[in-house]
Amino acid sequence: MKCVLHIIFAFICAANSAKILGIVPTPSYSHQIAYQSLWKELSLRGHQVTTITTQPINDPKLVNLTEIDVKHLQTNSLILEAVTDSGGNTIAEVRHYFQMMIQAIDAQLDYDPIKRLISDQDENFDLVIVEYFFGSPLAFATRFNCPSIGMVSVDAWNVMHHSVGNPTHPILYPDSIALFPQTLSLAERVANFFLLYFCRAPL
Image (cartoon, rainbow, N blue to C red; front, side):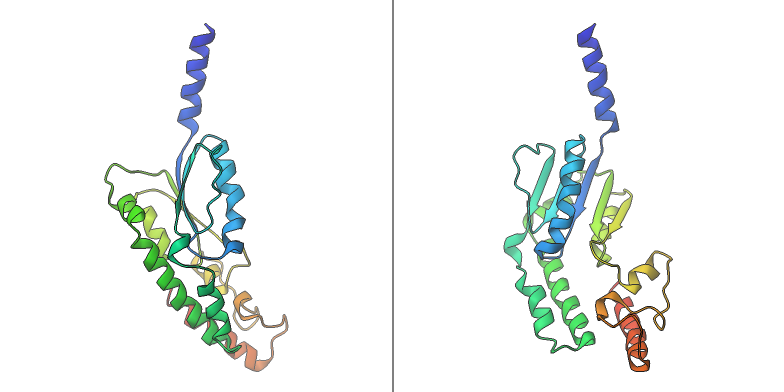
């Protein structure tokens, strides 16, 4: 009887587990570390988790966690370059950041293990969780025909609020990426408006 109960319990646990794909494309330790507790806890609760990350946990005890390590494709210097080369100009900084991230995501999508993941017709996932600074990783949910969750580890940009139906007025609320003070001057309000307009194109 005990044996039968153990088998039934095992089937119940398996039925409640999910295959989850986690994607955090930003090659920055501070971005990656924020999600590691999530991947770890999901795997410990019996879910089969696969992540695309530049900062793998590398814990052999997490037998339900498979990590595709893309650290060697790019480093944090890409993001630092986006900031240091801008000369303090917010619009230039954002433009350069987008350019660096497009290069990083392109390199990741061209990585053989990820290409095999995409092309494997037998592969499937129940859920895709992405760092939602860019919309492109959400295409994995379309590829695997499953729901998706977008997450951010910092204050969301105004354009992200707009994309999920939570619009913020650029004249009243400074964008978190712009580092403007809480009370905007006329020039900062105009700059904040154009920043929102500029950022909407990549998303």
